Length: 369
Image (cartoon, rainbow, N blue to C red; front, side, top):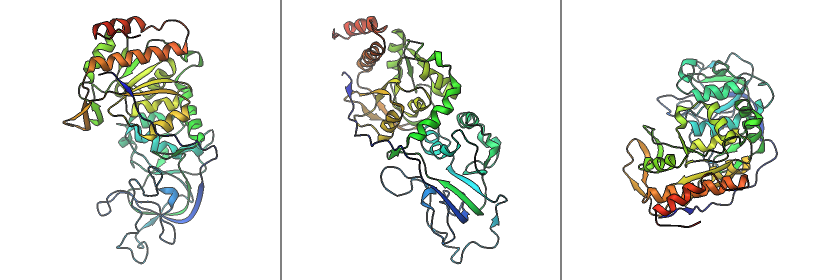
């Protein structure tokens, strides 16, 4: 079955103002503990959580992962055993979510005050407390380095801590919710060191970002390899983001005239590339999460979201979910056609995939043009 265009909700208008920044005195920092589970919001002297310190998804106000209730076993306030942090003031930048996609769209949006400026105070996060614990997550280490930060610059406490003062910026991007243009500026500043200006759109060979080598994750197509085998035979380069450095991923988006892939966080890398990227995304269903559309709006990208009717759920295995494409050859057919159309729109003349499309169309018995 041929691919169809996904339904995309209306993207909220981008916010051109800066996010709010709150300065709070006498703050309580509560990290993860066995008793409370996940980390908490920051709390002020009145024992109210500080709204700017929590992450929210969508248009509501419910925190997506933090606790906002005051500890029940502290009815009279923090016990005397809770120490005071050594610095006078901290810049609190939320939680370090060490999953690639969540680091980009949940952690990094709080770092906008560091755009072309040094931190006004030591950076404090809910994060690994020891530098060695960051090392398995090279993408985070590399992104922070491009911001001029070493992981040793990120303060984190393993026990509750009193803060004399905290500067708490609200995020510049909220999943499924909103996006401030300063987040785009931050990402482009980070990405600028990953490619040379004369490399932009220099490579007309399309690339496809595959999940076929992942041992686990959020979601994937169980039979994606059947698609990538066809794409590879027709000249598309098949790449695996988890095997690439962060800089190489950004450079890929900058250099290639068209990038395709199954829907996932690897496509968020376009945030760091020049505007006007052309992307083809293969989705497991007809609906697209608004977070992807916010990224597209920030980037000014042309993105085709396609799905194959009849795609079915299968055993998830080590993934949150797995789907099976009903007709991998038709899926490859549709991807080739759309990639060629996008590339041709960026440069006059016959697309490099036109011949491949014609051959594949004849093989599938669909001689469309």
